Image (cartoon, rainbow over all chains, first blue to last red):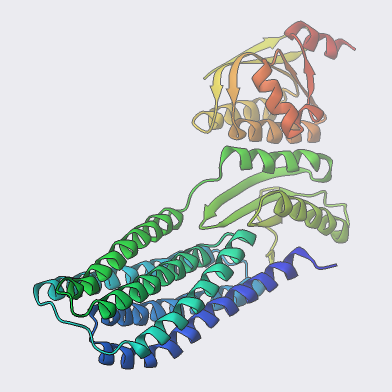
Length: 308
Length: 114
């Protein structure tokens, strides 16, 4: 039977693989995008290209963060991983904001100087393919987020949803601009589509920024979770001699709990370890996303050396 | 929160009366008071909760620490007159299995006679 730890490691590996896939696909799509922009002479496509480039960089940062977290998680009691995930989420939000500025500027310029678009065959092919890929990555990340909530995956599925919506807008815009090329108003469809993308991007960026900043601030645990900790201590009341302290906090999607307790000096170390293991497992099962450290102490409440 | 300490000389027994709400803002005061009593050898104790309106996890934590210290000192802590809300918290967290809980102060005093 798989242990909780191995399941968690597998999930981190899956998370890392999913983000890396998104990065590689984004990178591969950039070259044909450049050609499509040149051929179509579309400000919307140009904006989409710049947006995709900044998002690909942000995805790369997210992948680095998750990779580091996965490695750290197997080696250390790592207090910083929640923050790392949130910082990389802010990087994604930064990329979205940059894209919004680029798209808005390009659209305004095209409104001031309307220009018919060029050949769109390659652009349709590239954008259509990109839409399918983005739809797939969006759904995959959303599924992973539902299994284990994470700021990185949360920002990733929102990012790919935004990318998919942008692709659809580009496709519609290109088809209308090309189909009604002879009409004067058709020249405004391209910048109008770009404005649509910019609004969508702005909303997504705002959401990611507010969520990440909220999670970046360390918070105390909810009262309901504090009561869960105490009920576990009550359940093991006869297994320890004294309780010297409980420290708990929430960082991102993670919950960290440290319990300092004194055990009967006459008990064998294996018995003490058994109590610690059962209490830790009980708490980690009842409080999702928690990492519990139970430190045996001496009678003054000082942890024994080498306790991890 | 008001903490009232009464020394019952006949048994001998220490009665601690709690009044108001106990949360993280005043649990430290309660901890200092109860730990001080235990260290001074007051190991037979009743905590009268008749006027205690609410208790948070911070307050429960003090009760847990006190229970442990009294166990080591071979003493006893009996709780009395918990209102429904406080009693529910004790039941939900399993604290009612750690402490002897009586309906009134008089009942709690009788538990020391037995």
